[in-house]
Amino acid sequence: MTKITNNLQVKNKPAPRRTCVACRQIKDKRDLIRLVRIRVDEVKIDSTGKEDGRGAYLCPARECLKKALKGNQLENTLGCSLSGEIRDQLLKYIEDLPGGTN
Image: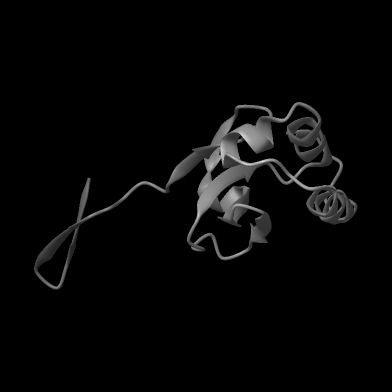
């Protein structure tokens, strides 16, 4: 579908979609949490969604982050092993997440 603005044709782009590494559901990118590997030993939560580095997406639910950490899916997707410190930071982060279903 096209939208005409100021006599120019502009195509409406669909919202980017990503897959949660834990539950494998495909959702809009903005509805997911992005974790990014910046260096070999550094992983952080990317609130902007634009940080450089290898990324992994998760639903904003405790179950998904716990499942991703337990099954090493997050490590496989990011291509690195997560230190105990990073795991602790992520577990602390999920305390503030909603406990609802995916």
